[in-house]
Figure (tube, rainbow, N blue to C red):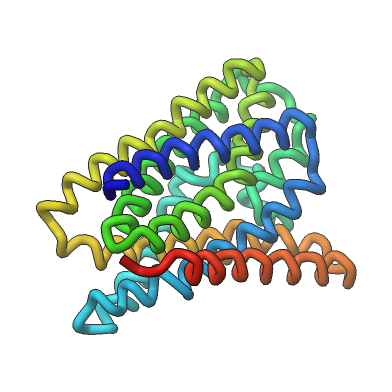
Length: 269
């Protein structure tokens, strides 16, 4: 397949697959499943960042410090965006994002399903934030595929893995805001199409501006590291018992192993 075809397929398949899985989780309230997915997603994100995107960025750069500076700037940017409530979907001062006991917006959303409806205010914030987030994901997927197919596949899997628990939390927030299941699904579906838009636009843009590929790989690494360390890992600390910890470590290692295996199954172009 051509690079553009890979980008389109990965964007569409990733959006639809994560949306369907998230809907099953949210509508059936399988909190235990969500916890498992969060642990696996952490491994997939960290594996993709440290085993694939960062090494590729270093290979494309003549100055390694440019890559590390890009990653640092990226982490700061994502921190600021989260503070501006683009990715956390928080709309009130005492919500989950401001509670140190709540690390994952997805898990926190499920545990607070009994909150009163807010007439759609937080639901609209969810859609705005997710649309932007998905658009950026599409750009990162396109940048990865334009380096080689293996990197694109690994990046897509890592993004899908963390989108499932995130989307599940979004479904819960939408339902809690007064949206019907059908409307919540349609709104999330429309939001997921931003991944395709971002991917296709980035493909044509990067053909004319190849020098942006390396910085985008650095930003992709920063995004994966930040989401794993800031949004997902804190939620695991709510279960400090030894059995839960063993399960979490095993699933994180499984996520890393998945990325490593894919990297060996699909050779570099």
